[in-house]
Length: 181
Image (cartoon, rainbow, N blue to C red; front, side):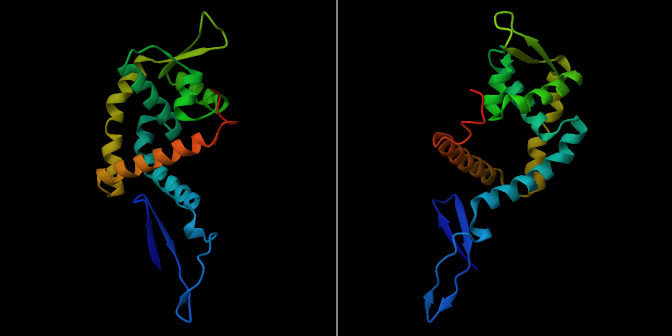
């Protein structure tokens, strides 16, 4: 098994069959060559690391992402975010997000209120219970790093590479039909 380093962010493994001293062509459909496969299995594995850390907080991973967006927003001007704002931040469609917001509201972590100026818009804010949950959630990121057993700098590099790939995919029109903007 050989490795090729591409742009210092992506390692593609491949098998090279030698025939009379000449390397055979690399199969572009080999499973281990697929970026989508590496992303899918890594996503599943990393979410499995988060699950036991989020359970004591009473959050699923998608709910955790919503709370992160709301906690980030509360650090700034603190104006309520609309459902569409949250959907855009999380690159998720509003129809998927709405049931999750209903559950968070039922748990007393957020409030949802129709806009007085446009009743099609629903504003979302942290409730006191949601604000206080942030203190407990501060333990999640270092626990993830510890459980993964990799250096923080390696995870930061991975995040930066994935952000770059996501930006390129979005610029190429990925998710255009799925996201409410």
